[in-house]
Image (tube, rainbow, N blue to C red):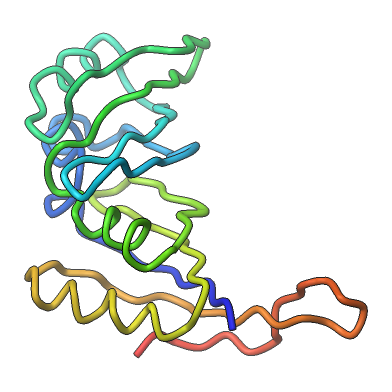
Length: 164
């Protein structure tokens, strides 16, 4: 049964850690993320709530980021395509080895909040074991199983559970 799980990861243990350290007021929202292999992840990232001139320098200096490209520049937000080259192994593991889909990921206030769809609930346990092996602090939030409804479509079950 497919399951949606929510996690939090401290910003200092994940991509954009130095950028978030320099610009803690900045909010980053992932629009889409692609994992090419376990070495790097390529997200499309919306940035808002901060000084964009300082952001450009911070991204260029952040060792977790490579090949930053500004795609869209609006009055109060920017869309970037970039490569995350360090501190992203857990996302690559979720996507490539567990078949998960990152539905939402937002960084603000010194942490990343992720909402991830797993094709099977047991894949979450594999991710949990991997975070222990990699000494990554991943804090569980809610978990919601998705079951087929009587009408043939998919609907969430009414039970929200805390992650193990």
